[in-house]
Amino acid sequence: IVTYDVYGLTDEMLTEFTNQTGYEISLMKLDDAGSVLDHLLQHKGVQTADLAIGLDNTYLQTALDNDVLWTHFANVSNISENTLKPYDGPYAVPFDHGYMCLNYDTEIVDGVNYTVPTNLWNLTEDAWNGKVALPSPETSSPGRAFMTATVDYFANDADNQTDWTDWWSAMSDNDAIITTGWSEAYETHYTGGYGEYTEGYVGDAHIVVSYCHSPGVESWYNGNWTKSAALDLPRAAFHQVEYAAAVQGGNLDAASAFIEYLLSEEVNLQMPTENFMYSVLEGTDLPEDGGYRYHSTVPSQPANVSSIEISNNMETWLSDWNKAMVDA
Image 1 (spheres, rainbow, N blue to C red):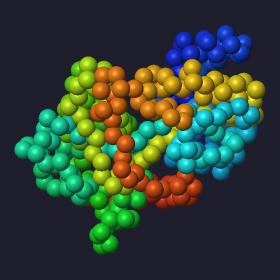
Image 2 (image 1 turned 90 degrees about the horizontal axis):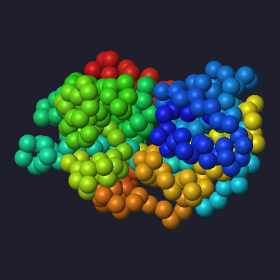
Image 3 (image 1 turned 90 degrees about the vertical axis):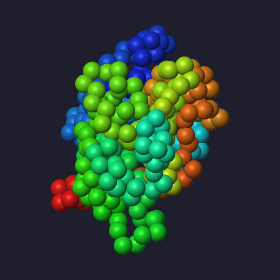
Image 4 (image 1 turned 135 degrees about the vertical axis):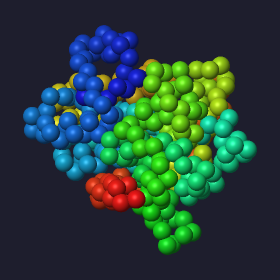
């Protein structure tokens, strides 16, 4: 199995699969979803994996276009319609999902020290200089998802004189903290999360890109308390769906068996507490324990960008983003 460090793939889970099926598992853990895609493309025709876990809907279409996946024959059902919207085909199955958006520290962004932003342009104001941490879309799947949301956000705002690259240039001018990945943004720079308890904490950003249910995870760990909240701005959130897919040239029987196992109630209902993402099974939600569900936001109007549109435009968007940041 080629994947990134998916927390939900616990040793207990893998051992149970082996006990049930007889298949031995070897995990190849890469940096992130982009690394999984790169691995599949680099090994096209000479694949070393049977199953890929962790491609999301900003990467999946590229894998499909490059013909590195196989039609699985896993018997799966009861998958929610919402998670099938980005892709509902025979080459990949969603196994978890969540919404990416801005999170803010409510103890600092409290209406006195800082006002809660009502639009993305607010973050380009002097008060937010150097106080916003954003993972780079070139090296981070959360960063890639959020950049995609900004494309849709500014395509549908009232200001027809500016576009999404103008906002990123303005954020660069305003000394936004651009990090290589989510961990650096959230754990090192963000003041509203658990980062203050980790080595290397800086704590210079009061807004960060993370999941809209990250405050719920914080609360679940902290006995129904969090100082973090999700910022629900129309079209500024991205619905991320992560997939399991059989790799062309691999062991299709083993891959299909694992997909069935991953989508079983036994395993998938554990996604919120093992992988800190929503289960994809119909009728499921985050647990209420510890304020998990209460402090988790489901965006009222997430960005509306299809997987095909993402695949067709991503390279251009990344080039335009890079130019916007360099020329700012």
